[in-house]
Every structure is written in structure tokens, then in C-alpha cells.
Image (cartoon, rainbow, N blue to C red; front, side):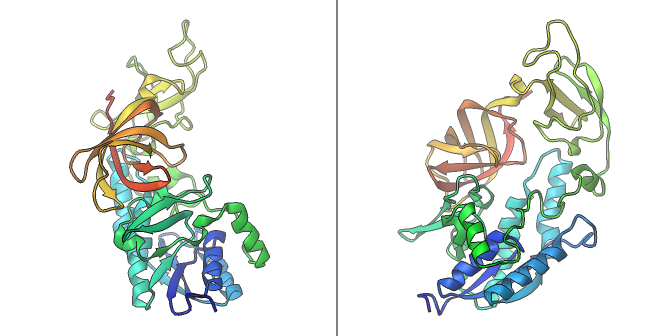
Length: 373
């Protein structure tokens, strides 16, 4: 037996490879491991897009191979109240929220953690690519070692109490290594592709999904000169930086518009909720899409307090490299970031997450890029 034979750990088994390998590694290390499958969505569970039934079958098969118990727990009510309602509120306000961040803070590391503790667990574990380190009684959230898979961005709202009870077994590994272990274990889901997108939307067209919950309010699409180029279907259905699905062609014009040639693509640059107007610009590098500053609120800091003002790095969206910035904290809930290099399509509702090297310090929800229209 390993060194942890007395400790009970409850692992969130999603049906994916990362959580499967996490459970396996913990068992190898001698923990008493229990698997839990979280069901967070049931509005249209029978539809072709919701893979929850397939995922549970996969998770149960994994538990079988590893030789651990699995329990199916339904958090759909909590999810609807705490995550989905907020997601819709944000979209209706014209912002673009990140429900995965909310799900981690409210479901996986709150409702699930509470449930695990009721089962007598000392810790919980998930298949996230991140790490936890204890330094002088303080818990730090670190990036996962695989730079291409690091998920600390989605976990930045975790606090000291949550991190003290959390293990991320695959955070020390690269994805290729995780797949290799899965194949070696002969896991039935070893080759399963990674899930992408928002858990309750699955692979379905996003606009079709939102349509069921948010009323359409069409209005004008305008360019920077105020010309009407077409009609939008409702501001909630667009996000800043979006270039697909605008339904407008390029405008041919002598002396093509700045930022692009005659056929430069159009990008969503602003959403004016008061006038129900969608502003678009031509060219990826148009000044309206570049921001040197942003403001954020609803801040959550891993240490329990804001970091000292100064030089850090930050991401204003998940799929981007860390950008050098200067942090100014304006009270416990608000902060602003200044970037020497312009950031592209800074989007209200998304999270700005602050790093000191590979340590994730926390972050907040972007309220505005400070450039204005």
C-alpha cells in the first residue's frame, strides 16, 4: 500500500481521460478512492447534443477498470440556480460570461466538495491541468506543467479553503503522458477526444441554444462611420471579436478602410445596449479591437486579499499567452490592468486572470476596456 492508505479522496469522474487517469494515479498512491459522476444539466438530456448518458457509461467503465465505487449525483438544480441563471443574466446584459469558471466555483468546488465531505472524504480531486502548492500555510494555485493544457484560468476563483482540500493529479503531467497511462491501463475511453465548449450546450449551434432562453431583438449593424450595413438578430447573440455569422459582405471602396483591404473581414467591435446597435469594423487590427487597459470587478484572489500593485502578467481570455501588465487594485472587489502591448477584443463578462510567473493569483470579471467607443 502507498503512503496515503488512510485518506479518502472523492474524484469527479467525467467520463473523460483526464479524470480517469487522476483516479488511477490516486489509487496507485494508496488513497481510498471513490468516484462521483456529476450530472449538472437535464433540460434536454435525451437530445443528440447532450452526452451525459454516454459520459456516465464511460465513467462507470473507468471505475470498473480501476476497481473503485462510483456514485451518480445530480447537481442540476444547483447548477440551474447558481450557474445557468447567471449565464443568462450576463448574456441578456450584453456581456459574454464564462460558465466554466462559475461552474468550478459554485458546483465542482462547492456543491461537489460539500457532498464529498459528507461522504467522509478528506480531499477531492479533478482532472484539471493545474497544481496546488502549500507555502508557509498558504495554498497557491499553480499552472499545470503542460503549457498547452493549463486550466488555472478556469480555477482562479478557488479560495484557500477549497485549495486546501483539492488534488490535481494530472497537473504534473503532459497530456501525451496522460494518454499513454490511459492506454497502458487499457481504459475503454483512452482515445476519447477532449470535450470542448460549454457543458450544457455540447456540440449544438450556440445561437439555436440561446434562442430558447433569450428573446430576439433585432437592430442595426453599423460601421465606424455610422453607415447601416445590415441587421443583427439580437445583441446577446454576438461577442466581441466575432467574425463569423454577421451576414454582411465586405464593402468595396476606393481607398479601402483603415485596418484592412477591400475585402477585409468584418469583426464585432462594440455592443451598444441602449441603442440596440451592433458596431462592426473591418480588419483584425482595427484600433477599436485593441485595448491597453481594462477594468474588472467581482474580484476573487486566491490568497484572500488583492496582490500588491505592480508588474504582473494576465490573460483577458483563455486561449492567449500571458501578457505583461501593471495591476492597480481599487478596493477588494475592483482592479484595473494596463498593458504595454495592446490586447485584442477585450470582452466584458470574460475573466481577466492575473499571474506572477506560474502562480495564478486570481482575477475578476471584465467590466470594460477603458478605451470607450
